[in-house]
Image 1: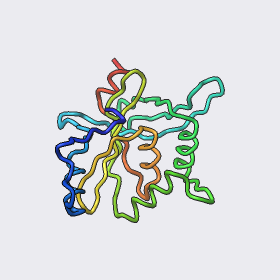
Image 2: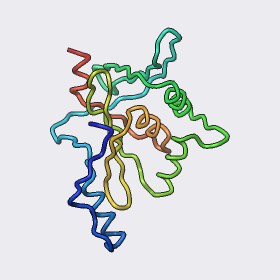
Image 3: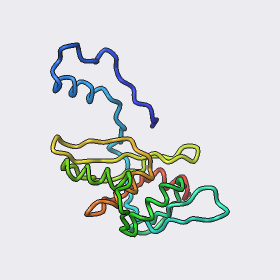
Image 4: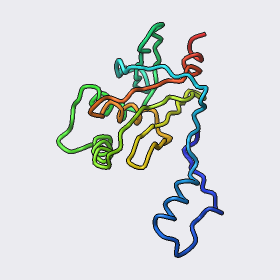
Length: 173
């Protein structure tokens, strides 16, 4: 997974194409995260957000929903840790923060978060996708893991956080 999105230049809509044709061509050519059908996911719960003064990054502690109840600690930035703490405790500010705004936008556009999927970990960086159901169908977006967690917790009905078995296996032999 990379933060860059590649566009197939040959699929760029011609000048004069309708907005719907241009939208369809562009959305089809954007690189989507690929989740293999054989990937086994485990349901995880956000247990806590830990701010340690001696640690450079706050940690999100996840716990597997079923036995063997493995846990996972994911480092995140301070601002996201504060936003996650607010989402976990259902705290809202006087003005909407970025994640609260995005939640309101998704709700108004009738898009539901189906799940946040933690797909892999490379060099200490966790990679995730945000799985949405929209009026146009299912959509999947590459996202920062912390953003996915925050948006999942901000939903009226908390969206599940799913972790690939291979990610858990890297921490549990």
